[in-house]
Image (cartoon, rainbow, N blue to C red; front, side, top):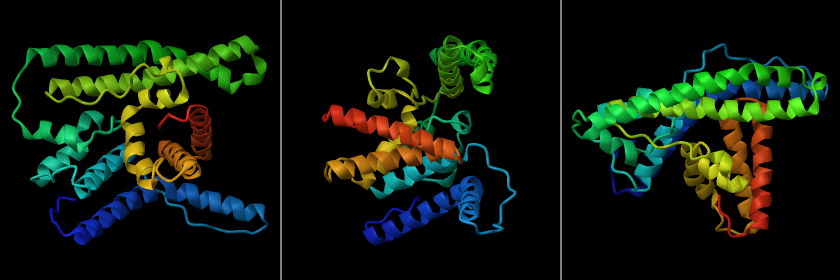
Length: 290
């Protein structure tokens, strides 16, 4: 990943090796059992019996986040958009920076590496802003998100036994819970990083005030949506190869984005539904981009 050569073929080979290692580790730890179980289910459905090996391993905490962060760095170096890190310690710190290691945001090397390379000094403004972010994050997580748990659980565990109004209320409560839980963590991570003199990206920008689903994905989990756009959607061709190919690229991006969230068909379906909504919005507004 830190190889710097004008030889395009060597750089390409190193990129492929890096991607194989990163995607391979992510696939083994997070997706092997999911695909193995799905394969067994398909065989059983057609009357065939199979005994597929499953791995009894612990999923490393935050592997999806630092894997994507590492791949972004490698791809940017290959594209000559990022200079390689000058030493391994700095690169390792970039990958494993603890405030955002577990649940993001997914930082780009061009933002985080320069901050790690400079000498930082004590600034009261950083302490003040950092503590404010941490307290606000805990407020959203503990006071708001956690107070919604019982409402949401009652709604989704017994949907047939409650009224339509209460069911609707439970759905809105879940929307509030998931936003305050995730954005609250992001605020805490950004606050801790600011105490250390590091500025992390703002991962949310009032997503529920979006006018459409495309704008929503520009405001929700910004570091992930821009990662998927820059390293997957654009790499597939983006909107440069015709309307049908654009729709295909958009749908594949959202399917893989859904799978990134978790090794479950529920997340694949979730990604598919969001893909459908994005396709509809793009069809109705041809000037929209992901």
